[in-house]
Amino acid sequence: QEASRRMLERLRAFAPQDAGVLLDLAEFAGRQGQAAEAAEYLVQAKKYTSDSSHFHRIGLIYGELGENQRCVDILKTLTARHPGTAVYFSDLGICAYLSGAVDDAVKDLAMAIQLDAGFMPAYISMGAIHTMRQEYAEALQIYDRALAQKAHANYRGLRDDILKARADVVVKAGKVEP
Image (cartoon, rainbow, N blue to C red):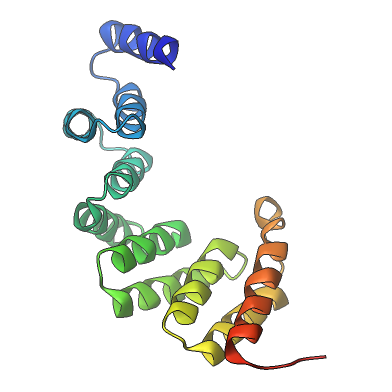
């Protein structure tokens, strides 16, 4: 890991205003438990980019650092600028949930599903929220909707996760199904 960090630092020295390198450094620092250093890299990266994918990463890294409200703020801006992007709404829903705004989280995840019925991560997150709230009928409904959809190729592997989550909800709800 130290070799990776040295390589990133050399890249930064070569291109100090490269937001991608700064984001890589922020992720690396965050994973090493160096939250203050990671946050400083994020501040620098924000100065040097206007790219939505960079801002998406910035928001997610803030979330990984436990700064969920910053994550929410950034993702709200992204959803306003890109109202047709399901992944932004799905990630906003997760950050909203982690910041305690559960009703907002459900609305954001529902929007992600409405925008892209094949985006399985949103179903998994929404089903999990309903399960944690002991809203088992709603969770089953979400999982059944997911299973009825054709998943995007890169999310087909999540079908097994959805089936397992659904089975867990059936057990928690005390239902027996054939």
